[in-house]
Image (cartoon, rainbow, N blue to C red; front, side, top):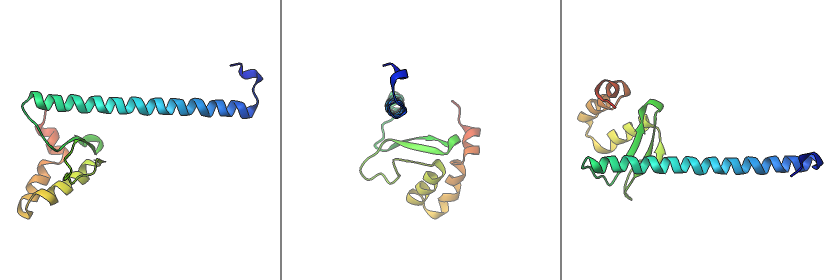
Amino acid sequence: MIFSKLTMRELFCQADKNMYIDKNQSKINEATEKRDLILRVIQQLKDKGYNFSDCIYCDAKIDAYFTLRASYSFFLAEDGIYSGAVEQILNELFEENKKEEYRHVLQLDYLNECLTK
């Protein structure tokens, strides 16, 4: 296509089309990367002998999580913030006298002290 013969309107339409294509390609790549990550993590869990019906991937450093696998009754949102998930898990699964203990264990500072790569 020879751009010098196009009107401004045609140039803008061409630019919009290219941005749309680039945006879609980017979203496809992101979805593929996320799917590959999910499959790798689930395979690593299986290799270690674990199998969960409900499983989330948490990145506490950026305060985010997303669902790797969830049953129909899983109570967390598909995507969300790690700190919010911690509070919801504590409220759903633990009795009042155990919440503070587990809240401490799930804090980023404590995780950094105890976990290795």
